[in-house]
Length: 160
Image (cartoon, rainbow, N blue to C red; front, side):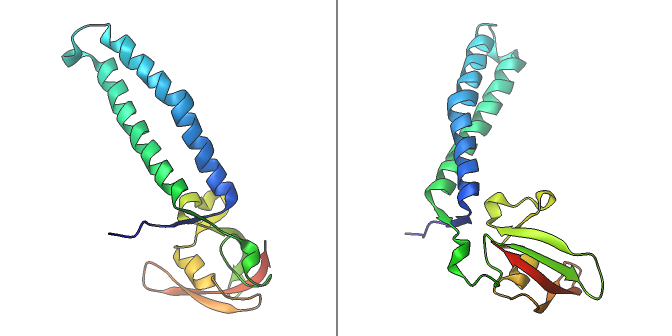
């Protein structure tokens, strides 16, 4: 039997997934069911675009519900206190700068399910996070780029 995939995430990330699941089940699913019933009343389903659209949306929502249930069921909640305060780990926020003298950047390192780089959250599976994990303030690390080159960064600060 294959082992279930574990989804590392913060408690906040799990709560967001739970809220999305709750919304899908209690609000969106009934709305779609209602739209399907209304569309059925229009008659011939073979040429009924409202019906087909609602059925497509229903399939998407049901798939998302299954995905969210699996992710929540297999969530591994990250404890940022499990490592020393100055060590980069999941659930912590790290400030670093590209060497020699770029502006500092700050990101929280989170599980892939809650990654949102524009909101300052990078996945623990990203090249940047992989290079930074388990390093300390003051460490200089090389981060591989997709082009095959790399950049050097210095860790300036680690916060919980």
